[in-house]
Each structure stands twice: as C-alpha cells, then as structure tokens.
Length: 93
Image (cartoon, rainbow, N blue to C red):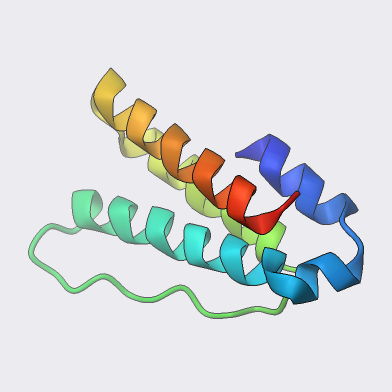
C-alpha cells in the first residue's frame, strides 16, 4: 500500500487524470469501508470523500493503515494485499 501510494505521488498528472487517481480513491473507499464494518458493526459505513487527485495517495495510506489495525488473521491480510495489488495494476503505476 505504501509502495502504491509512493508511486502515485511520483506519477505525472496525466496518468492520475487517466484513471490512476480514480482507482486509488476507489481503493481507499473500499479499505475505509472494511475498517468501518469491523469498528462499527451494524452501522452504515460512511463514504470517504473525493479530496482531489493529488490527495488520493494520502487517502490510500490513511485508509490502509486504519484497516491494518483491525485485521484479525492472515487471510484478511492476504485479501487486503490482493485488493491493493489489483488496484495498483489497474491504475497503471
């Protein structure tokens, strides 16, 4: 996740505009949703706002670190890593 965020920070604006930032935001939202489901079961998860393409890397970092704190086992960690890797590939960074 940190590697993906660093690559986004180094990416040219054109790559972010072509979908890299949108993919990052979608990942950050999913990571935040998963965290909220663990921390606040039975409540509707709030949606992470779009803070702009230049904030997407920071949103991934924050959401990913929050999720890492609530993961319970190796299977959940592997699933989170898979989500990040797939998003990185789709983002093209």
